[in-house]
Image (cartoon, rainbow, N blue to C red; front, side, top):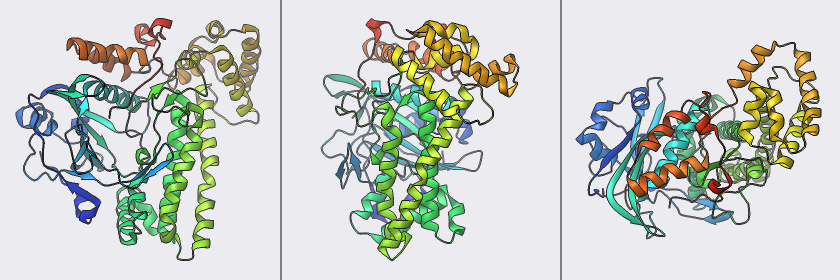
Length: 479
């Protein structure tokens, strides 16, 4: 397999080379053959001995130049000037079948110069979680990193207890983060910032090169991409869980699935992450945090936006000020589609908010509510503790639909195409992880992967919300 590594054309302070750390007994548990084909990679080679050696981080093919990337970041609001890939190696990049350059990275491949006394390894559970959730997100049309392969290492990692180790191979539009820009800004490294900006523009937003102010045009594009991404998350009840600036992708993809989760019952204040004690990254806070992270990016770009500081601040503030409008427009469009509305009308926002108010009061299941409205609106009544209030809302909604004149069957088909029947429910993921970790049984993982990558198909066993005994209250980061 031939990989290039365009990132290593940048100055050496952008990354660190790291010695490989071979694993004891690599074993392939999942290979995403359709993704490999999309990337122009030989899936049979990847599944063979040489491919397995590369996917486990044990041995690289000729010409590979794996590196750990340098970045900083705000973690739960606290700035850390040096983070970097402490357990990941960027193997290189490929040009896919669509002519797009995409990174191939290993996660859990061993210590790097950025490991900060960590072992650089990953446990099996978080690898399976990221594989399932990232592939589900891709099937749901969410910009996301993708899972190419998962490999067990034949070794254990010590966290709270001894756990089987694993390595995830993932694919991304790039691994550039807000924190990457922060790394150079905090060092007053303007040459580094310029080189990084130029690389990011070339990689993701080449149209910005032609703008009168390329840096501002680049920033505008990142703001817009993040607004659309978070609106998509919110429309699906997805909680990222750890929206640090080092987990905020410049490309507008969802990256770094740690303590992520999907809502079961709707609760705007819901937090799953075991480390988010203050609720900073709660479901409803995600748009606000997205804007906060983008403000941190603006701070790094000010000297490149304009030499006159006050003018640069004013220009950046104007650009950032468009985030909320972009987000609200994107979110309104997402939610109107979920309710079968094809046109915009005054009062649509209030109609949507009225439904969410009822869902919150009844702790109605997020996914089941919208799927029931899609298939049989009358059945949705059973999800609400005050049926008469729901019936009042439903009458308003049906009157709104009537003004569009859409036939019921066409409405139903359109809604079922955007409201999934299946999401990666937290309790099912835990069942998968338990089977794999405790019994080395990967059949539940394989079955769930089939289900979540066909999210609009009816599968009652995977659509079922958790019983009280199955409820998952916390999810955990994989570090």
